Image (cartoon, rainbow, N blue to C red; front, side):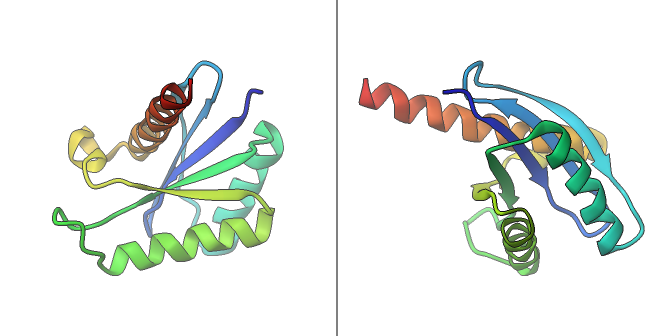
Length: 131
């Protein structure tokens, strides 16, 4: 069964968004949300969720290189919990320690794509263990 997934690279100023699915196991950058306030950001997210009808939401979880959590880790967790509460969707957190470093120029949508691709690759690895 194919599942559509939206992924988010959360930032206080910008939120990168990517879309993918479990059949092709591919992801693509979708958009960067830069609305002025919290309410407008969630309105933009709601429009994406209504348009794409994802079954799963993936949120990048920033951590220090050693895996320790920091202030943005807690903010990303709060963001993911708000997504879950508002939209009644499963939220999965993905360690994003190595994605932001590999994205040039602060392209948050591309960072979201890398977060989603990391999740999809992990699903693929786990599925192959079952087969």
